[in-house]
Image (tube, rainbow, N blue to C red; front, side, top):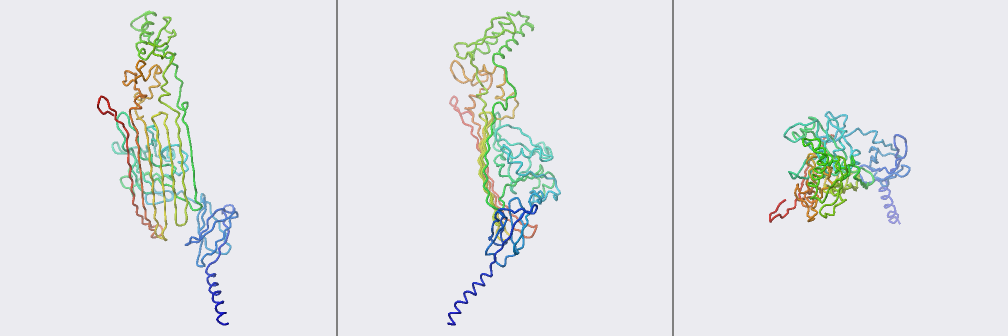
Length: 526
């Protein structure tokens, strides 16, 4: 009997000991400003992965908490994360992050509050970047940063603007600032562009998805050279990509579509072909009567009609006039059975289009006390008004941070981007821009093909000006860029305010230009 009682009492004793080693922690989480309950706040026992989420009334209960636990860590989106000692029936007040967060920006060695930073710097957050329908983030800085100039030298689809911080510092050397993405200096500027009459601008910053950017810090004075040295002579632009926030995983989908129709870029309505022919006839007529020739109206009318025919017979048009006055109506008919009587070529329709802009972004982010992650994939397509002008980008990014104990923290940033663009150099003067010549006088009378043979005009004098309907199919001016970037960081938190950080990065960019070769008279020509 004694042994039987002992066998029953001992398990009960040890069970009571084990039960006494864990406790239940409960309480309520409220907003400090209005005492309203906070729904969905995460309460985690410090040093463990044990936690709970607050309900509709802001209440929580955490079971099986080790009796040795001393505090809990409470976090919620848009609220300031804080730590509180464990007590019975806890009442926790969280502060609104927008009321307590001084503007923090990334500087050379880490982060600093703007109010305490001694140098000259500006901060632009993601809210100013995310809604801009552009390939780059540069437009978001325009007008928001003192002493910074954002200029555009190209209207090509996918082009990014150039940035100058406090003017031009050199006549010969580069005036581009140094760009730093997540602590790693990156190459910027044009890479692999073709030279000469036509080329496609290809700035590497267009490979960066603006939707992945959390903030942009612009360092503008000598303090910028504290880490980057002479490379910071033109200023430093530090780009910080997004990270996850503690709480539930956040899945974000964003899609936008825009149009640039014809009427959005037409500033005036040109006169019709008939009105233009009558005007040119009047100019020729007045030249003969008012000039040194002192011709009669009949002589001037005959000379003006012959002048028109000499210019446009080869395009299939015949001109005549019933009278001899300077302002008589000129009849336009077809010449040599060309079949073009009453028809005119629409160069605007041949060159231009209704451009479409489209952007699609998807991201997943979140964080726990030990792990922080952000992953995104995006596509952007940008068409220019010119049919040969287009840009598209496909990009993906993964940012992962993992804490290992109380000292070490590991970070991995991986980004890949593929861009493809096509177009022509639009930095030349409008006098040399073939596409601007659609505004020329009597342009509808010029056709891209010979009415006799149907062959395209390939010489300037055959079609009066450059025949891009033909050359757009002969010349390839496409550029594709593949960019891959990987950075690994190891941070050791040695003391409060003292960190030891090591960064290993790899950045590779491959640029390919497509310029097909044509066989002309047995020879390869571009």
